[in-house]
Length: 343
Image (cartoon, rainbow, N blue to C red; front, side, top):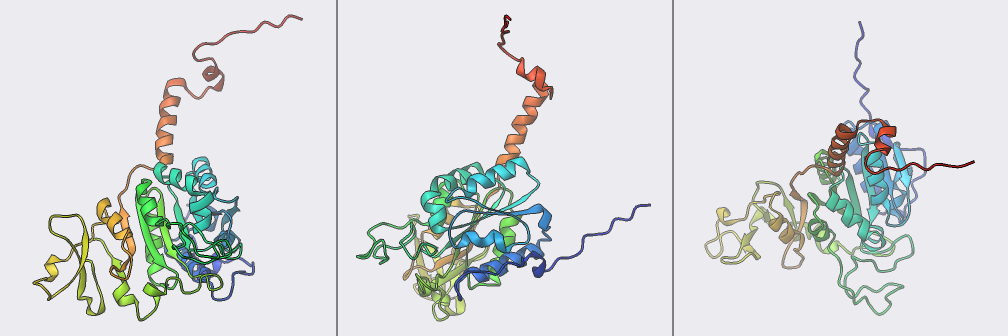
């Protein structure tokens, strides 16, 4: 009688390669790497069934440090490669790692189409609001006024909101985390992995060399309570010291406002509940910026739909049922002609 032996439980070390991790000391990418490795252990991932795909940039080194399959591709094209991998082998667990420049500049078009197609993979966008690998030029997420080698007098561009772009492009799972939230990140990543379809996770990541402290207004220890709000499905959108502040929809409008429990007759029942299936609410949360609003962290939106490769398989099955699997017969369907070759 054959006895099935369950696979050995892996550890974080099993997903770490022998390659020297080469990011600048203090870079937020180190924490993200550990969080991803921990997530893979938590979800019982198998190295032989997992693949990491990246484009160009500091974040793109990721596949070298993961003891899985990996592809370090070309600038901005990681979503295209990942789509091909998932279509060729839907059983693979595909993760895409990209930076704000790689994903939202030269790769913006590929990102949009991956999201609208709903390819079943996890897309991690490391957002540090700067081009780090090429020495600190401003990026699509850099704020107006950013001084850099390419904008020495300050950028005049309006920045892209990565999460708002993902929602507008048809993303079915959109979430956020922060590189210094080592407990929060694996929870969000596990949720992303459990979702069928494209899971888009923006991770605010500090570039200690070229954009150090750019997120301090909501990540510094003395700012977290009042400038961050951790959203959770079905729970009131509360924040602040003692959770006395909350989000409330203004009467007769679709605008969010910040209110304080105990002031102007506000009670906890007046506080908005988070509904991660409500795309309008997710869009409002994604657009919140300080100092008046807190920055929303967690799963902003999650609403499942058939994935791209599932839909492709349905089409293939229908085609096969009509034509069979005989290639010779398939080539002779419809209008054909014969060419006589005279010697």
